[in-house]
Image 1 (cartoon, rainbow, N blue to C red):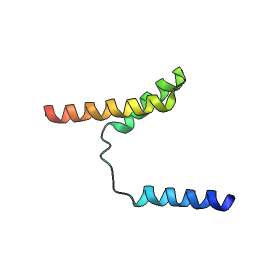
Image 2 (cartoon, rainbow, N blue to C red):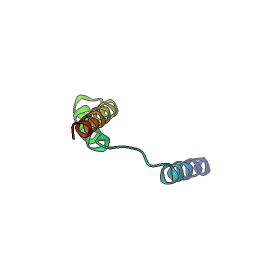
Image 3 (cartoon, one colour):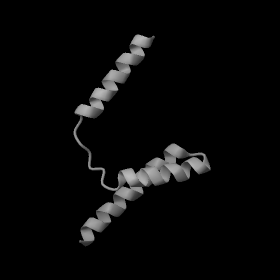
Amino acid sequence: MTYRIALASALTISALVLGAPAEAKGCLKGAVVGGVAGHMAGHGKMGAAAGCAVGHHRANKKDKQS
């Protein structure tokens, strides 16, 4: 059982490290703020996902204005 967990963890970490970089402009900051707000309401993961979407949208909107 521990072998499977270790294997799954190793595969996940290697996929994250070796994967292509994502365009996460605004997503990380929005996910943190949304995650904290969602956590207070009892829905941390949904808040983080929504915060990421809003942060990414605002960053793209700001880039188009410049």
